[in-house]
Length: 89
Image 1 (cartoon, rainbow, N blue to C red):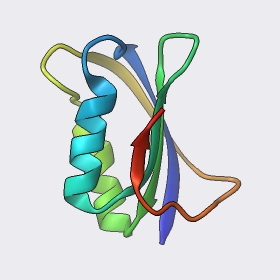
Image 2: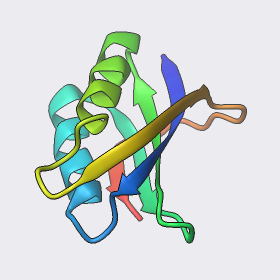
Image 3: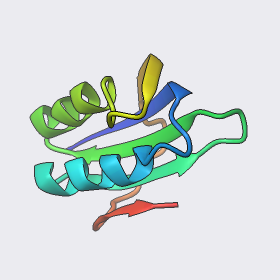
């Protein structure tokens, strides 16, 4: 089981980015969360098999059509909890 914290920057709020992430995560069987940050970025906590988490990260590097992703920072989660589903916050 792998858990990563992903920070996505650019035009990623008000463009359906979190819902896009939710659909991709569920399709890949990745659990975790996606939430908007006050600075305009989106934070994703992705937990699952390494290949699935990496596939999710590859998809969010592009994002939905209305998004303009300028930066994606991926780090291992320092604190981990077990997620049972993927939720948007």
